[in-house]
Image (tube, rainbow, N blue to C red; front, side, top):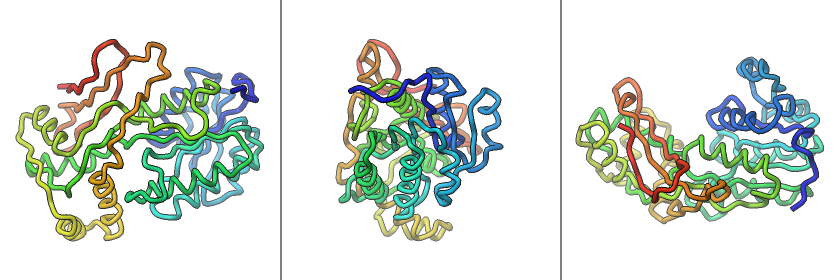
Length: 319
């Protein structure tokens, strides 16, 4: 596919560039294009001071204030909309506002970080919101890419501390998930931004090649820490009652249950060769937990990360 811009000349705008995903995208992007061709849209430009010091343009942009996005996206050749960290229908609404702003700015191409389960019928609410956003993006008279990200491996961090305190990973019934690291997804996003034609339209799920459920997580935590962590399956309503009693809002608990319900239905049990555009086309995934971070003060670092090489696909551990 022939593209309509020259990377050295077109301004690439990345939203949410001080967040966990956006910051990694920009860092990798700067390995491929000049800093003066990169702009970031962030709520607080002061937090992007390190980027501006390198020559990146940083402007205030808020998905809930379209006028700020018009300024932040000025001169854009491409805009990568990193999906809003908002729950419920407001998420799709905010993402659509950002897409519309990119179109108004005259961008030749809009990219959007979607999810592997983007579907109107998903049991996981973000899947439904991403599907709505993808539909809106496709309706624009503009070249576009919907990057269907695999499920963030960092989700483990929400559950590991309690498991390490109690020796039990008490969660609702789940299913296999192709957990994927932020860093690897950022690399895929940069490929989409810098290799014309590599990833256009709606991508296949961008995941690593391995599937893990929470029984696997309990096993890995046990091996890494030397403690026995037991996976305990809890009834949905029993789990909801327990976490709400501990202070979790009921709406947040119900949102989280959607993840477990979707996992049980096999929605996340999809793997693809995330790195098929890698030069050698052969990478293996390792799920790593750092022993030094397995303490009561900080959660273990869990990372599903492919590595270049010629070995077979396997799950390994960093001890």
